[in-house]
Image (tube, rainbow, N blue to C red; front, side, top):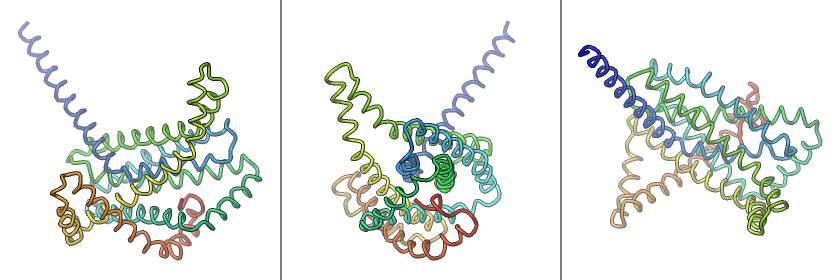
Length: 323
């Protein structure tokens, strides 16, 4: 009997260790996912455009195709690459983070430039109308390919940021945490996208067939509010990209030994210390965002004249190369 009790004690102890490990993995995965907030918001903000112009019946199937491609990108390609990087070239993580941060800065600055250039929107709208006359099946295939290419770039940023945020010496722990980050973010992003692209239809259905006056009013409010919500989502996504991109570049520079930018930003932000911790955080976020905008504006001609032609030459250009 005593042997059985001892065995049960051992099993209980193992279970506690396992539970603690699971909690630790979940905690690390959550922390890593939060670090990738800018890329996540960008992903959620940009994806709905890939279903624009298709019939309502094709919207969810297109989102599902992109979701499958995103899972393949993260778990089959990027997860093994991240583990190899962590095991054999950890010194490369900071430079890769700088590239990812620079990409976020470029994307944010490009969106700001587009807002300030109404003619660009006219060209985009004309191109969209021209494309809508093409064969819908071919157009859908091209849109999905473009979305998956864009997702690959954003997923690479997310996985690299997450890899840098996970603190462990266990390769298995790291693999599980990265897999949780990849799956969790994919579900979050594309679940949100599915709700966003169907919100108009749900609102219209409620407005027309709602059983109560309140329900019909809510439906009309959803239909009227979605364009503004999409603009707000794009605006917030742009701010997040600039802020997170700038902070990633600054922190990565400190990681490779140049602490001057990070120390200077911290010193300036601390001047708001009298107004509380939030004021310090806000000041730092504003500085990081302005720095991200400056970096992005500097990168725009480099991307337009050098990087984009190279990507097109190797088959990675077009709609998926930039959004």
